[in-house]
Amino acid sequence: MAGPRVAVVGSGAWGTTLAVLVARVEPVTLLCHSAESAARIVETGRNEARLPGVDLPKAVVATADPEAIHGATDLVIFAAPSAHLRETADGLASRISPGADLLSVVKGLERDTLRRMSQVIAEAAGVPVARVAALSGPNLAAEVARNLPASAVVAAADLSLAERVAARLSRRRFRLYVNEDILGVELCGALKNVVAIAAGAADALGFGDNGKAGLLTRGLAEMTRLGIAAGANPLTFAGLAGMGDLIATAGSPLSRNHRLGEELAKGRSWAELEADLPGTAEGAYTVQAALAMADRLGVEMPIAREVSRALFEGKSVQRCLVDLLARESKDELADYTSWMARVGSR
Image (tube, rainbow, N blue to C red; front, side, top):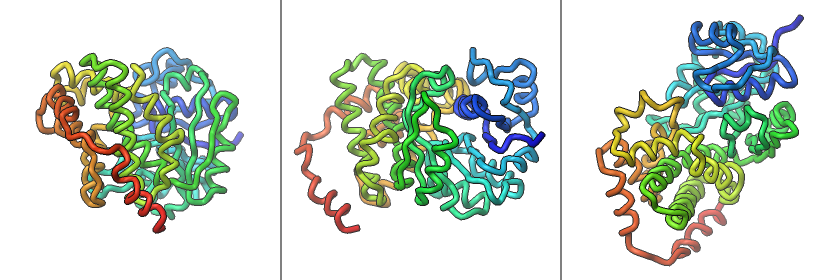
């Protein structure tokens, strides 16, 4: 019997969840980082370390052998942490089937190069960037794994690629849309994690719903400004990858980025938290790249800058939020004309 034609690279919470999603319809290879992780999954039928309480379908074939990727002739899904994605894709480059579609579900920006995750995969794997799609949206892994209703968007410059991936992964309770604006979709997925850290801190400090609503609205505004400056469609930021994912990530106790903000507000440092948090809080690995991109494009991102100061400069979260509140008030739409001019000039 032929092996799985779909593979998921990375057995974190989201990678394991997507393997579960695929396995409800067809066999899937789940490529784990270590032989120990793969052996535990095979032995117990669960990935208790990353997705506790979820039984994995028998159609999930867990392995640490990269040669297993050879058989994934239809679709390879990359779900490794952003900090390790280039190394992971590089190690698999010679094993990826030449006819397979590639999909990034990683949300972040590479710190040194400012590359988006689809670009990192393409460069490291030695494939055209047009061959890589991206999936993003309000997708808390534990809820999707429990088959609760969710939606996401698959983006690719080649809309037929996005449509193929969406058709392969869409389920009755996992509704997928498509979008040609892969730039905007990936920026949304990266930037909302930064705002979610600030939201977690605001919740821990008892800022209330009004204060949090203001923070999220202004966070979405700075996300959108950076997107427009980079060449993205501003409407993408009002969609599932932008507003939708921000609502879920900034408001749920299941969100690792939200939890990071809560813990920072308790006075704990990022150096202490990095090893303690279950899973990866991608916002901490993205914020400096986001600010470097903003500086390059001449975009103001005050919330992201305060998050960076809290993480890497030892500034207290309380002081960060107080300083945000102390910023000079201005016309909410003062820059509307100039930003729309950027859009109209394309």
